[in-house]
Every structure is written in structure tokens, then in C-alpha cells.
Length: 257
Ligand code: CIR
Image (cartoon, rainbow, N blue to C red):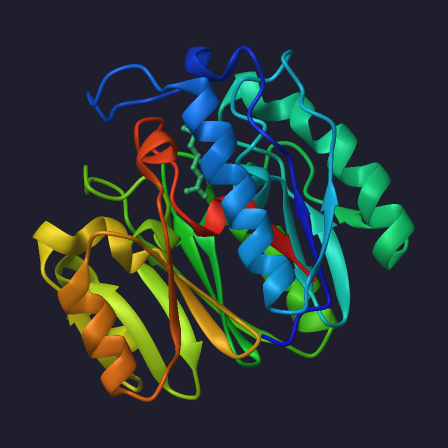
């Protein structure tokens, strides 16, 4: 969680055409761009150099860069997004990863995998099986991670309408501390950690991100913010309304390196 770089991509003119189930109305592009700029500024303030990809109107969901790659301290792998409209997003990610980390590995057919389903907890990776990430994608990632010295296990989130991706409902803060939504709190794979359980009403904010010495969290959740601060973490809050409208969480706006 010590990051020097983050890859981002601003929402484009086609942003409102992306995939969404939120039912919160159309996003306001100008406001989304403002919120995105504040997100990038928060990363920079934490000592992270932001590598911005050009806005990509051919891919309305392209601002959710996290879904296109998994980056570890020992190497990077391109995802293979489960939504067909997002498949082409990996091209831009590949070029920037080549420059920053060397040639990335890649998930291949029939595997599908969205980076939002992958949660690193120290040297262990939790891999969500979801409507976007299938068994083949999870197995390929697992094998690749083992080759780099990491361990991994899967957690199915299928059938939970509140969770698009695993990381929609879980975040690693550091040490043994995980933020989790109620639906995941009893999962056997998570019982070895110290769990900060988030009530469903605050579930959106469970998708927070530890970056260097702070935790980035969606604004508007004072109770959760206070609970994370009480554990000794510094919290920086960010307005996320226009990304939530497109089912996007805070983590998915960057790939941290
Ligand atoms: C999608 O449905 O793919 C986008 N509208 C939202 C992706 C959010 N990604 C994430 O939470 N990792």
C-alpha cells in the first residue's frame, strides 16, 4: 500500500452511456470531471504521481480503470473484463503498464476477470467470483499470483445484488484490518482478520482505499469515517456521487502501483 504511481482516466463525453443498475439518474459530466480531478489531486497530495490516460469516448466505462488490470509489487497482469463493452479498455492499460512496469501478463479466454474483484491483503489475494469474473479467470490469476510468491483464494459474491464486484464490499486498510459489508462478514475466508463491519445503509463507502498514509473514502458517511479514524487511520473523503450513478466505487477510479 505504498504507492508511487496511479493510473487514471477521466470520464469522457459518452460517460452516461456506460453500464449501470444504480437507478440514480444520469450522471452530470461536468460534475463527474470535477470529482475526478479532486480524486487525482488527493492522490497527488499523498505523494502519488498520477498517469492520466486520455479520455476514451469509445468506451463509456473507461474511467473505471481498476477493472482492466491487477498490479502487484512483483508484476502486473491485464484483466479480461467480463462486460463485452469493456473488453477494449485493456489496450490503453497495456501501453501504460508496459512503460511503468514492463510487459504485463494477461488473462486469456475463456477466462474473464475484472480488477474490481481482486482484493490484496498483504501477500494474500481474495478473488471474487462474480457476474464479471469467472472460474477460469480466477484460476489463471491464482496460478500467476502463486508464481510470484503470493497466495490466493476465491470468494463468491454471485447472487448478491448489492455487490457488482468483490471490492464493492471489502477493503484492506492495513495489517489485519478489513472493512466489510454485512453480507461478507460471516464468510469463512475472512474470519482470521479484524473486521470493521459496515451496515448495509453505508455499504457504498465500504469501497475505500488505503493509499500511503491515508484512507480515501466516499464523502457522506461520517459514522464509518469516525470508526476508521478510531482504528488509527487518517481518512480523506471525496465526493463520489457521479461515479456512484454508474455503479462505480472509489477504488475503481485508479490502478495503484
Ligand atoms: C461497470 O458496470 O462495469 C461500470 N459501470 C462500473 C464499474 C465499477 N468498477 C468497480 O467497482 N471496480
